[in-house]
Each structure stands twice: as structure tokens, then as C-alpha cells.
Image 1 (cartoon, rainbow, N blue to C red):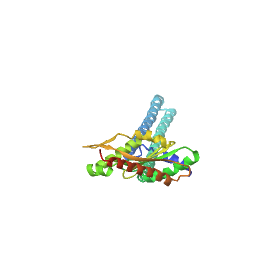
Image 2 (tube, rainbow, N blue to C red):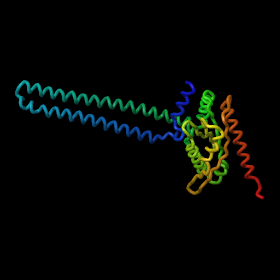
Image 3 (cartoon, rainbow, N blue to C red):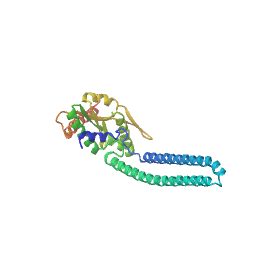
Length: 278
């Protein structure tokens, strides 16, 4: 499988909404079954009405010639037609039951396949892609950027003082902060970009056709994040490091460059906070 085909498969999952909602899937399947049975019932009703119309139109001829051979033959023909139609309806019902059973089996297989795919590639807490998928996708995009020559930028994020948030507000509040930041991160994702949670309070954005000089415009949309819990309003700040792909870079090189800048920015922030007030 070439890299373009792999990219097309990856793009089938919307990065802004990758959480697999099993209840929605089941509801849509039930709605499909309901509409299918309504169409079948309407079709059978139409066939029965047409049959009744033919029989009613033939009754005058049968009653007029009921003692003649012609009248008897018409009656036998009508009864035979009605019998064939009833047999045909029974056959259609049998085939429909078999088709519905097969459709249900295929839908269940698709359901489990999608479920396992999401368990393998999606972070269950935030609904973003996980590190496994992000690393695989990064390799694909680097190969495409190398062939086509478009810019590619990797941005790494680390939430500031996340341990203190857990210690002060509790781990449930910490999970809420992670989900809140992930939702905002997903909002800035364009089609073709990637948002992922690498683990803990570490996140990443992979921006296709984007130079590192454009990153501040993206970051401005992530400012002033506040996550509301039942009792508190928790401001969320972050440190970031961005690196643009250079010809010959491998995925590890790009990760290392962005992580190095992230660490530098985080240390600079700590030193700024630690400065004594004069």
C-alpha cells in the first residue's frame, strides 16, 4: 500500500470527532430496519390492493357467466392468480428475513471492527488520536511533504502545572481539564491536520501546508481557556514547541526538535515565574 492510499484511509476518520458512539450506531441501524420494514409493508399493501382490484373487476363477468365454462375458467384463473400472488408475497417475506439477518451480521461485524479500531487508535478520555496513530500519521505526512515539497509543522504542547491541578482539585478535575483542552485543540484543526494526545498532559498538532511562522496564529485561538467543573473555574495554560520539517528529517528528528523547543519554553516560563518581585 503506497503512502497516498494510507493517507486517504487515515482521512476517513474526522480528527474533530473520532470518538466511536455505539449508541448512535445502534440507533441508526434500528431506524434503517424500521424504514425498511415500512417500505416492505407498503409494497405488500400495494400488491394486495392491485390484486383486490383485479378480482373485483372480474366478479361481474364471473357472476354473469357463473354457470358457463367461460365463467368457471375465469374464476379458476382469478383464484390461481391470487394464489400465485400470495405465494410470491410469502417468498418475498422469507427472502427479506434472510437479507435482514445477513445485514445485521454485517453491521455487527462493522460495529466491532470500528470499535476495535478506535480502541487501538483513539485516546478514550479525550477522543483525540493516540500516540500510536500520531506516529504512524507523521511518517505518512513526512513522506508526502518530501515528495510534494509542501511545508509541514509539528507542534508539541505540555499543560502548565497539571500536577498541581490534580493535587488541588482532584483527578476528576484533571480529567476535565484534559478533555477541555482537547476540545479546544480539535476546534483549531483544519481538514488534513491532526490533533493527538501523546500521553499524560502532552498533546500535539501536525499542521500540513503550514510554516512554523504561522503557528502563532494557531496558538492565539488556544488562549484564554477556562475549564468549568462543578465547583471551580480552572484556567488552562500551556507551553509549546514547534518545528518545521526540513529536507531529510526523519519523524524522530522532527519530534526531537519540537520537544527541545518545548522544554526550552517551559524552563523559560518557570524562570519567569520564579523571579523575585522588586
